[in-house]
Amino acid sequence: MTVRVSEGEDVTVHSIEALNELLGRRPDMAALRQKAEAGLTAHQARWDEAAEETGYIAALRAERKAGDRAEDLLEAFSMTPATTLAGVAGKLDAVLREGEPWEECSEFPWSQIRSALSDLVRIAQPAMPEQFFADERRPPASQAGGLAAISAPERRR
Image 1: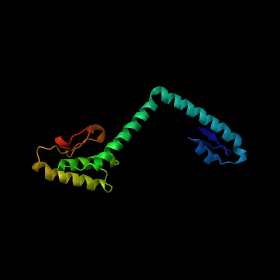
Image 2: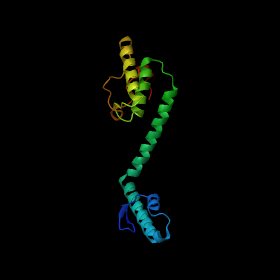
Image 3: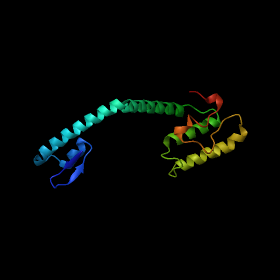
Image 4: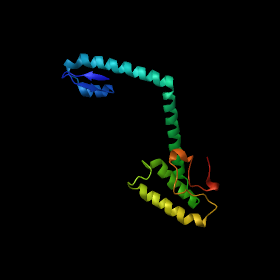
């Protein structure tokens, strides 16, 4: 909502908190604050109605539920000991997929984790050809469809 303050300047606010920060609790701003609060409340009600009608609220709930489930699975994954080198590679791959802020991030510890995973795959894959290891050109997590480096006996969904 756009609020015209006493100096004639238009300021956009997106919440009651921002409005209070802008106007403070000065008595000479009471009428302006009341009008702006009513406008923000009406705008929020319209947004909520549109979000519900379009399915946006349901999508947010589903996304939150899926995120909570992913966190639970990652927690269980981190507490389950790997029994193969491919399992260790899978754990490193999961850390990269879930924690790395963007692919090929150079900040610590992401390049070091990618390097360790690459070393592990390079060393272990020739010795254990029956196990599936991640390839260096791994797809982004959104396209991966699951862990990229697990052995067939360890695969549990």
